[in-house]
Length: 343
Image 1 (cartoon, rainbow, N blue to C red):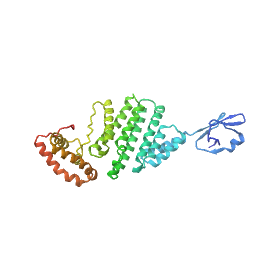
Image 2 (spheres, rainbow, N blue to C red):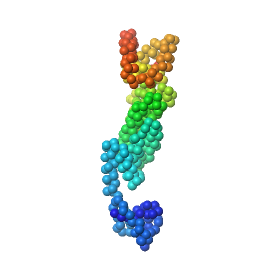
Image 3 (tube, helix red, strand yellow):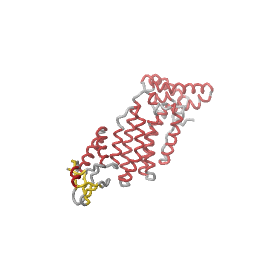
Image 4 (cartoon, one colour):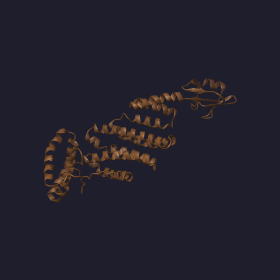
């Protein structure tokens, strides 16, 4: 179909005023002859009834939504970004198009781009949540939309974590805040924007827990040793926020002196074998001067060993047998293997 396109602002809505056509976007007037010259082929239906000229793009948008959502279901980032961007051109305030065009643009990133990509992602979330509040009815529908944003943010976060896990440990260690802390901060934005809405706050809490548990697990394994002073306070604050909403939630944030090699071998800082070893460290070794020297030496060396070799089978295998023997001997002497909190 053909319609008049304003030369000044590219607007399509005109009202006839006497012998002139007036652009409703910028107010420019055109004679009938000029208007004819500016008629161009456009997509969509043109309504020329009465004194106004309007364009109905509903069919075109339906097709674009179908293509965009199909790309979203298939996790096709290239076409997802493309079709949602096309929708955004026609509906600049559409929350779905605004969010997913941004989300898919940030999918194909390299390690060196993670920090900037996450910053862009976080900075966009607040305005998108505000659009959801304006466009989606409060209640179940609004919660569903926010959950969708949260789920997509988690998938993006997992992608960045996988990218970091695939590079040298030294590089990954220099980016601790691009790990669990990112998804925790997405939860902060949701909680702030929907303060007082219990249903949506629960979405934020689930993101806090996800980020907190990942960060603490990394801390227990010694990954963030040199960043402990930065990360530990953040983890403590997040734990407090979670417990304000879920008083039953418990998670132990490790002290700077974690059992690095034992955690690496047994796969967790909180397991029966490591509980036994931590009790022995705090109650026996720490009670003598030579024991304290051993502890200091261990914590000076073991984080580096774990960072360099912790992902290799031979390293874990080399330590497994002697640690098993030590744990067995300690248990025979009465050192318990029940849950333990460091002194």
